[in-house]
Image (cartoon, rainbow, N blue to C red):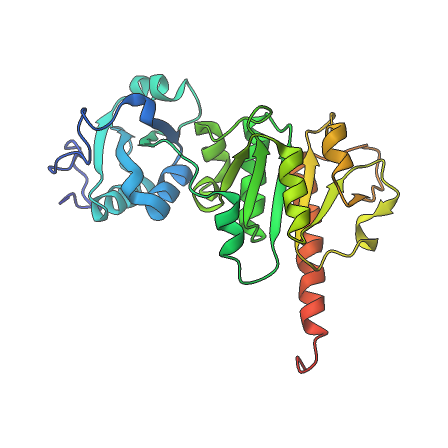
Amino acid sequence: MTTNPHSTNHEPRTTNHEPRTTNHDLTMADTHIVYGFHAVVSGLRQHAAGVQEIYLDGTRNDARAQDLVRLAGSHAVRIITVDAQRLDGLTGHARHQGVAARMLAAKPRHDLDAVLEDLTGPALLLVLDGVKDPHNLGACLRVADAFGVHAVIAPKDRAVGITPVVSKVASGAAETVPYISVTNLARTLRELKELGIWIVGADQAATTQLYDAKLSGALAWVFGAEGEGMRRLTREHCDELVRIPMSGTVESLNVSVASGVCLGETIRQRAAALDALPGRH
């Protein structure tokens, strides 16, 4: 692509290469739309081969749009100049910021066995039971990425899955954190326990406080949806239940906030355990 990112003209910003796939190779069911600068840029940086084309508002010629044009050009991704109405239609009138992209639909990139086999340290997993809100899932994926979670696990029948809203809220984490859907969550928890992974459920009715729990080993954190919590069978498969100590008037935290608090304490304890090893000082 030869577009000058500092140019002030408004010529159509399209590449002259052929699309990556033909209509014979790809159907709309194989793709999904992501929108917003952060989500589109993250898609290009994390998985450029999966970005089919980018739709950019023709009125945007600011630095952010120019940077996107340059990045897309470096990956040979076609940019199509469109109007705001077209973007509204593509995104369902979401806050698209003047940009959207058609990407290959996210498919399971990992199974749980593959994730665990590749680990070189203790496992850290995030299990979500009944999280159906796309904003919550996107935020949980972002938290998972920030704290180095190896995979997010959720049941197929009680989860939102990866959607355009999830991808936008996740700000790239939907492309970096393995998201694994399982048919039977209770069975998966049993299998994790057999592998020596400690299952800790977050439950505000628990007697053990978060900061009194031992969290330095291989671990899977389990969270239910806000207000509903974990299902009974899921709770029964936890090795331990802990609660986050609350000092204010609210009775519960959003699932993504709660997971961030618990994962942060896990990372702190792991770092402290490493520092305590002989020869570390």
